[in-house]
Amino acid sequence: MSGISVTTSYLAGGTLLPNTFIDQYMIKANGEYVKVYVYLLHLVTQGQSFSISCLADLLELTERDILRALNYWEKEGLITMSKSGETITSIDLLPISNQKAPVSVPVQEEDSSTEPAPAAKILPALRTLSPIQIQEKNNDKTFSFLLYIAETYIGKPLNHNDINILCYFYDDLSMSSELIEYLIDYCVSNGKKSFRYMQSVALAWYEKGITDVESAKSDSSSYRKDYYKVMHAFGLNTNPAPAQLEYLKRWLDTEHFELELVIEACNRTIDSINKASFKYANSILKRWKDNQVHTLNDVKTFESKHKPAQTKKNQGNNQFHNFTQRDYDFEDIEKRYIQKINHDIKEG
Image 1 (cartoon, one colour):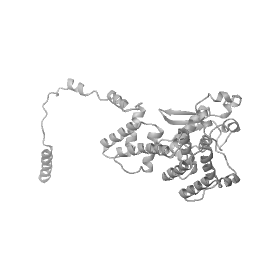
Image 2 (cartoon, helix red, strand yellow; image 1 turned 30 degrees about the vertical axis):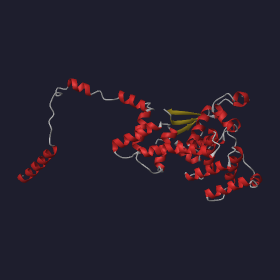
Image 3 (cartoon, one colour; image 1 turned 30 degrees about the horizontal axis):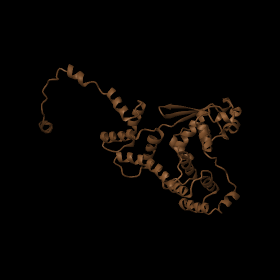
Image 4 (tube, one colour; image 1 turned 180 degrees about the vertical axis):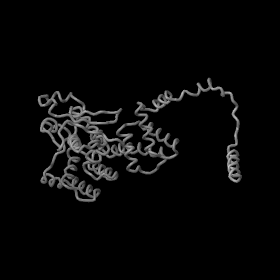
């Protein structure tokens, strides 16, 4: 998969975070958005490219978090993104000094501005609690039990930052102890023991209005269900391997192909090469996407337009059209051909 290039007119040689960004943008932005922007600055200085999935793993966020952050900074006018269809191909970081300072904008006008701004205000800010405040939380028997549960799942004592995020779930997001326990179980079961990753999942649930375990299970099962439907289309009854999971995330979460379209690509892969191949299916989906094919009906329309119009022409112009085809015994022909070769060798 080709990487997304990052360019800017900043001078290279260091990761520069302008004071204007801190004064005018950082304070009102969601902390995860800031983390994504700062890492983009770092990528520029290193001259590196990246993919959405790799950046999500690196920053311990979900791919949806990364896309939300990029859309937010584009709305704020700090980056521009080039796309091929829905796929981001490059990102250009704009000099902040050239942007209009939003200091004079009244608070009332911000409420009716761009879409991501209200979303950033809805999410409660992550507070940094002092050691004394965290020690006081241990007096809460419910929270103390959650701390024990978390350490049991993680397999080691939690550090100050981990406990701080656990407090954030409990106090600021108002998650029940049962929901927090399921959150930890869900993330650890998927190989993610980082509390930063758990925070991303918790915020996604918060935005969806998920407040109980049953709703969380329903959300996570529907998420997994689509993955397993694709695996079953390939005739695979196992959990997806990391490389396969990367394809599934790209198709369903990043590029947002319809599930039916992905399954159709899998079926065509099996029909063509008689085996499961994520790479082959990806080539089919890429061709459809490049030709603006988004649904099964689009596939039919696309194929009808590109179907070879050769049959009727041949029927009208081919002088051998009425020739009566004979039935040949190709096995007998091959046998006689081999016998002739052996005879010629002996005669020679």
